[in-house]
Length: 189
Figure 1 (tube, rainbow, N blue to C red):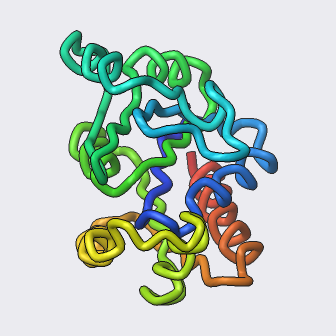
Figure 2 (cartoon, one colour):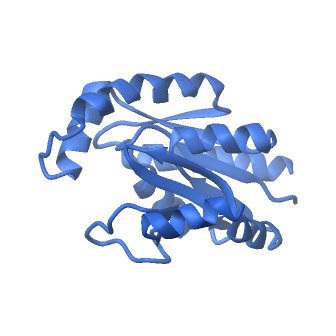
């Protein structure tokens, strides 16, 4: 069985982190790439588990030194993966999971066409905006910017290898659908 490189992506607020956490709990052979970010830590997040939290200066140094496998600036925040972290996981023989924004997914798919894009879609755009507001404590800052970005992010779904719908109240179905895709691909490897 050969290892796969999976990219779990979708618009901000679609549930990538939640779905990934459940996938990792259910598949010991699936290993997540811990990505880096310059944004502040949110409640419940742990440095080195949720993300590698870096200040903006340090993040830019990694970019300048060529240490980043991929990176993007999204909503005035840097996100990316260090090459060493990715290479270390790929040498284990396990399936590797990126949990990243659409911009990062585009970059990786271009560089690694064999990567399998698992695109999470919301039940509706309105549902997605409600999730973002709830996550951000009802804050509507950047809401217009986010709405504009959603159309661009959802357009990438046409380039994905697999689409998974994550409707409100149907998380278990989204997880089951994703696991079936992974299992089917692993059985063919």
